[in-house]
Amino acid sequence: MSLFRVVYVSDAVGDAGVGLLPLIDIIGASDRNNRRDHVTGVLMRHDGRFFQAIEGARVDLDRLMGRLRADRRHTNIRILAELVIDQRLFPGWAMAQTDASPGLERLLAEGLDHPSVSASADRIVSEASRSLAAVS
Image 1 (cartoon, rainbow, N blue to C red):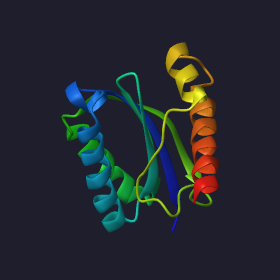
Image 2: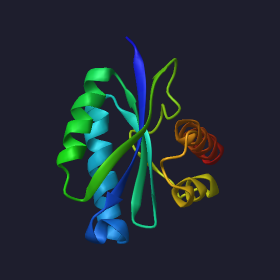
Image 3: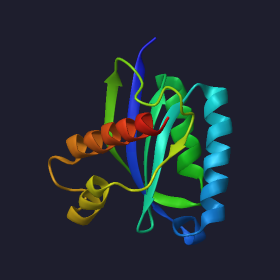
Image 4: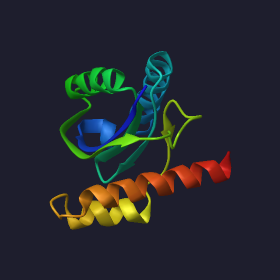
């Protein structure tokens, strides 16, 4: 079975962009749904935006992206990277959450239209994986 990784950024709506309880709700629901669907990944939130990487089978990621597009807690989903992968970066995390890295802060400050956005997004995801592995 082929594995894929999708990395996207979206604009949070309302309290989802700043509140602790909405973030806890998102992580909890994501963890349950992703375990069911064999999806792994990480979520970061910074300055009213979500940055998320999800990994799994193509059909599972397509189904998840459909649910994400219908989720009213965010809007304006922009795919930054979509890759075929050999292995998961977050095998033990149905949905990890981590603080925004300096790399993510730079990416959002520079804008999402620069030519190296895909490589930058992939680097941020790799850094998050290493950071989570260090604390596990």
